[in-house]
Length: 393
Image 1: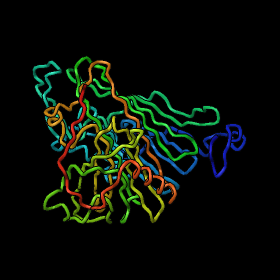
Image 2: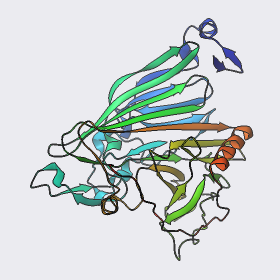
Image 3: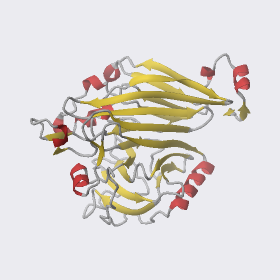
Image 4: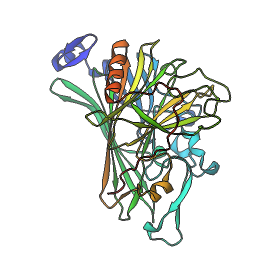
């Protein structure tokens, strides 16, 4: 059954109350037509509960807007949703990614995440290319997808909104990785289901790294908002040492926007529940609004917390990752690098959940506490204990 406007409705009931499902829910295609966004294909999802989000087909099928009952969830940066044709991956010393960084979900990968570096490229068997040079967070987030389908699908009295596409990151004498992405949302619910599969279509053994930059903004992010997660230990903090407390922003409780705030990044070791799921959330108790991210520990063993409380760019990021914040070369040295042979793949199954009201926030907090306790200290001492990860084996 579909729960809409306070009542349970069958497929027949829904049909009887409107000439088309699109009156209150559905997926539709549109094309942006002005400024930096001009020409981008976008899918708009509405579940009928007040959840609305958009998928940028020409930006790796990442999620741009996200709102619930008119309240913004996803972050919009000053960079906007820039058309990929305007993007210069190698520009600004590898930092040009920041000119295309905006939205609820920005995908990082497929063979590199984190800061700029060079790694050995002998696997590609091409003499002039001794190393692979990487810019910030990889190439995939600005590659257009080939849209393979979208629409509504009924399974009995349940209606599923869906879209699927393929993003190909490839080069001659280089990688040929395909991201097969499927996004689903059930009508009458406040959840977004993300199913990704990264496949090596090439015949070189190819590195694979993957991360979601999930970015939350005002009003779910506001002074006093709480970060909830089953943090076993804080492994690393970019600002640890003398600067650890200087900006007055700990990992748990969010401050108001500040001027001249320098980003802070933490890596936390998370506990999984009995089902292997890791939950992290940002909740605003004053508004009774929150956003929860569920990932699988065996798919994303690492997780970062990104804090950008700079006025005019105010955001908090929840970042599940396949690798430690140490980067490519450390993964090679520690034998943690993921390498995919021809036809080999990695799958990622993630749920984004709106928390609407005190009861849903309390239920989320209970799920997280069941998995593991959360440190009360706002500035837990980083342990530098980067646990050994499983690589290709």
